View 1 (cartoon, rainbow, N blue to C red):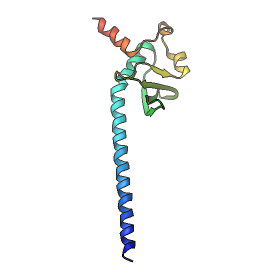
View 2: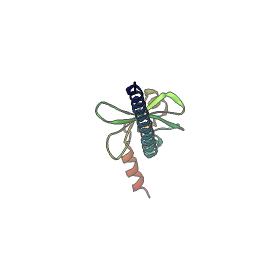
View 3: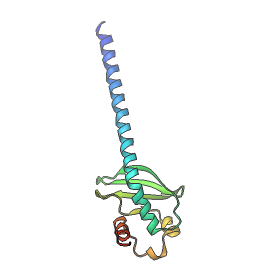
View 4: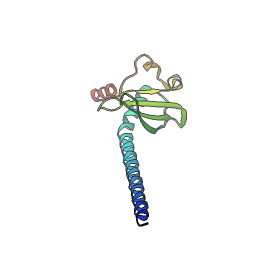
Length: 131
């Protein structure tokens, strides 16, 4: 009879420890997501400012890792979730190019950039050259 309360208390402690671990992991994950969003949003905005017209708002929604290990930032523009964007973090430099829905190119792509969309690094190099 004395073993039953000990087993129940042990199970309760294990469940509580697991719950605390899960909550700490979610908090860490949210902080990491916010840090990446804060670091990469200016690069995404620079890409769209240079290559597109009429994009007023960029909303970042989630981070997803594909099977090859590349992290992608998902989001949308101008408050329309159908105008999705997908920015891959392929190296330590950060976002270089942003993939988007076909409608984004049709509506917002600058005509002079139709053949040659510049990456964020190319945009930064160009800005550094101009006085």
